[in-house]
Image 1 (cartoon, rainbow, N blue to C red):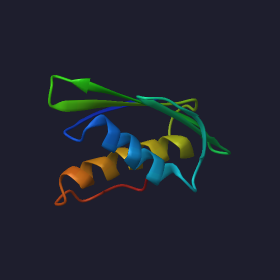
Image 2 (cartoon, helix red, strand yellow):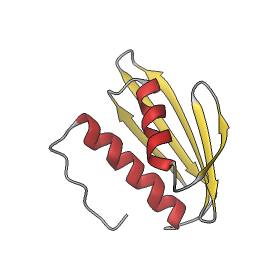
Image 3 (tube, one colour):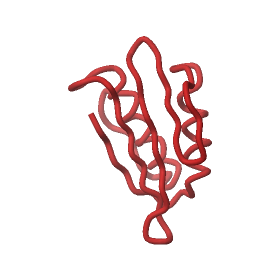
Image 4 (cartoon, rainbow, N blue to C red):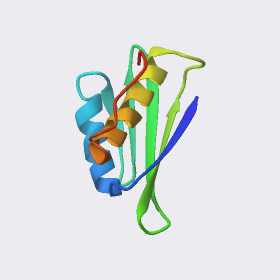
Length: 96
C-alpha cells in the first residue's frame, strides 16, 4: 500500500517525527537525507519526504503489505500524528 500526505512541517521535522514515532515499534533499516526504512514482524515501511511548492512537504509512505495490515495501521497513525503536530485541534479517529 502507498499513502501520501502534504504538510507544512519541514522535511527534517517530518523525519525527526518518524524516528520518534517508529522507534520501539520497528527497527530502522536505512536512513538517508530524505528517506527512512523501518522493518519489524508486522512488515516493512518506507518513508520518503520531499519539498513541494516551496512551503509544503510531501510525505510518501509505502508498506510491503496488502490491505489493512499492522504495517498499514502504523503508517496511517504516523500521518495522523504529523497532522496533529501541525493542527493541535485535529482529533485522531479510527482504530489505527
